[in-house]
Image 1: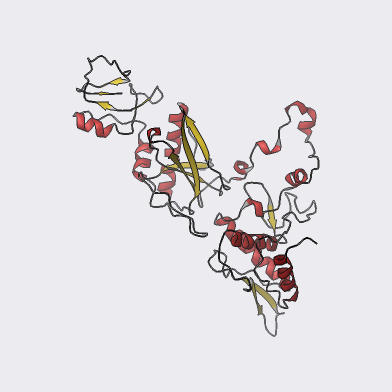
Image 2: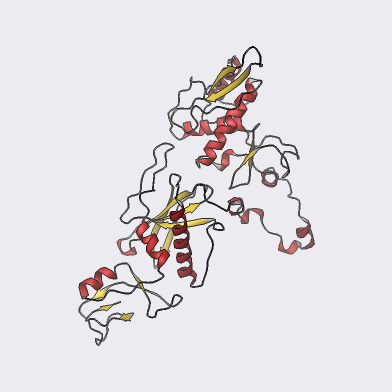
Length: 390
């Protein structure tokens, strides 16, 4: 009853369309993402096909797919994506002949998107054909990492919370109510992340923008997951009163060959072994995410429409290979100039063991020798050449 003029015009056009080729919906279609499902629909043993969202564990069944595509199209208009209001979103064809019964095939018309010209399976009615096309479009959007979790119906336990209903306790919770946990405290994303051979990886660029010149220069990194991470908001870091901004940006899907996959897994193991200072090892099949360095200096790319920036040529594979094969390399101390170059942005240690205390190199000082008394700064490490790095 409180629908706006855009909603009324769209519903009227939808009603008058004889061939069910719905026009592009407005920015806000006010359509619920939580349709009714029977208990058998959400049964784990159900044979009905569905698409699972990794963030909320919500499922998209074929009867939900049309609403999801409507919401996706409306979201495109809200983000400034150019769409023609009078353009039909669906096109239908009739397949069949004298022997077989005529069947309808629906295809989606949405130029500039990965789901343009996607068709569903032949169906006996136009509504079923439209649902089939929308379900295939949802699958394509999910594989491309473009299906936002806010478009997917909520799972039953989150839907009860959304409607203000109590969540039933499990047998374990009833026996030990003192250790009851808040359901949203533990994300479902990692439980829904698949393991085994890598089919595709979804990268997120993590970069730092220091608000002060003396904060330091940190190269960006990639977080590579098997399922697309949701949108992550940036945040502030504070160190000794200096503020730095952390930014996240999605990148295009990466396809790695077998050699690159093993190298990226070895590099991730090396990073966490250095951070934790413990002999941590995780196999490629069991790893849920990976870390990769990007070339530095590196410019932050801009997203154009639905096209995420491609970072396949920006991964520093030289660093990946070096760290994967070696946990440490000796310092080149042939001359003071060579030492300065070798210790630029370096971490050093004073013994040839992997798990020990490490130090960041701040500066190589040429005005001191190993026998000089450091009055203005503490000595961190000594070098046999006539220079000191601190």
